[in-house]
Image (cartoon, rainbow, N blue to C red; front, side, top):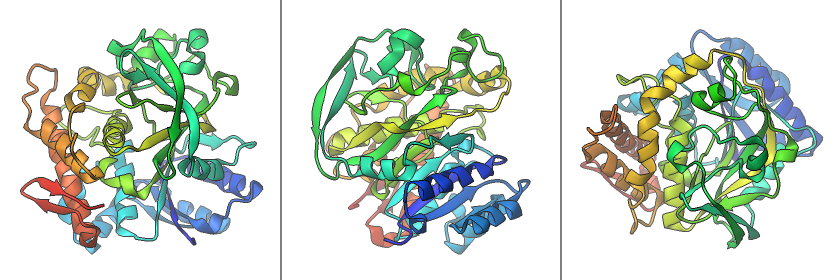
Length: 393
């Protein structure tokens, strides 16, 4: 069981937050020897200090700035695919997924953002692992818009919708029930967040905040029982507090944002969550939502800067889920579902949408993602051929 968990942290300044996560593990008796931490950063950051922090904590890990990532690509003979991970973007978490895929020992991955802290009374790592092992009856949530607001439990009070939730799906009628979850079917565990809610810039402006946060804050009282989104219902997946099984990596690419000619940003984890949910529905898998909560301490910044990054993709976000909603229906693997979605985007005519060609760009990068995984681990059964992928994962 030693080092079966890869913890992926995109960071440029607040890497010291990881001491709180390590302290939480010690407090709750979680074995830190299971963790290998991958800090994904940039050349201009304090890489030596990051390495010293890991050494001081006695936790296994590595620091990858831009230069080290280039060296890693070359050492693993995938330098031609380096473009799938954009530089200086939150989407560089995809490098951590490539790192995991290249190392057989990692059965589980964690995404942790550097502006979060664990709740002291919750066993952060242990709870996520329990969620991934969950079987039994759990609340199932759906809506007449085919979208589930992960903040639905107290929405009548706070009125919040998370970043990435389509505007056209607002005002939904929520339905709840229970469903039986089979052993091994939970493949991702999304922990939610207190303090600063994860909103997009338009909603932050509507909440009266010009510093990129929100006037409305969330507390533990805003969250009830853990839940899953019903089949054929989508949800926002935020990567700030997330655990997942290795098997989902072919369908969990964090999309290429920020460094593109359309200036589309801020939808990397949102769109990856849409793709993952589609794959889960096809394959009979589940995304678990709720605990463990984390405290989100988003630093003040101009709401208008976030707005500038989000506006180029806002219209596309309204349509993406409909575009891929029928993709891969007969697929029997994550890679096959993902390949079908990639084909739909890469080959479509999206000229009716603002920046529609970005969908083609994303589809081509999705194909490259699968090809890169196939190159990294040929023995895994991923085979890339003429842009089509067949898989046995």
